[in-house]
Image 1 (cartoon, helix red, strand yellow):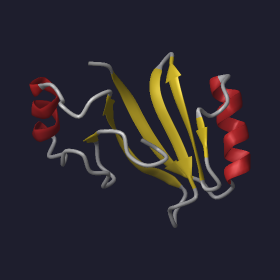
Image 2 (image 1 turned 30 degrees about the vertical axis):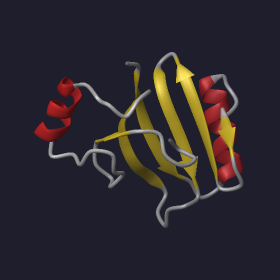
Image 3 (image 1 turned 45 degrees about the horizontal axis):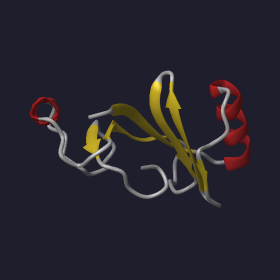
Length: 103
């Protein structure tokens, strides 16, 4: 099972943010919609998403993304140990399968 770190950020100016993160990562977004963009980077293994969905600029949520919904028991133990709900984005470290633009 492949896992990668996930960060979803709320941005005020999407176009400017896309320019910044494209320059920073050396890559264009893997997915782009009118209100969000996502990079799937291999070095480091990162799913970085930005959107204009939030009222406040900054971190929307953090998590681990896996290539299939059946997470390993070790990952569940880690999520449970920090009190993270499984498969939900609530602003705390989460274990989440692929969802929406940022998934």
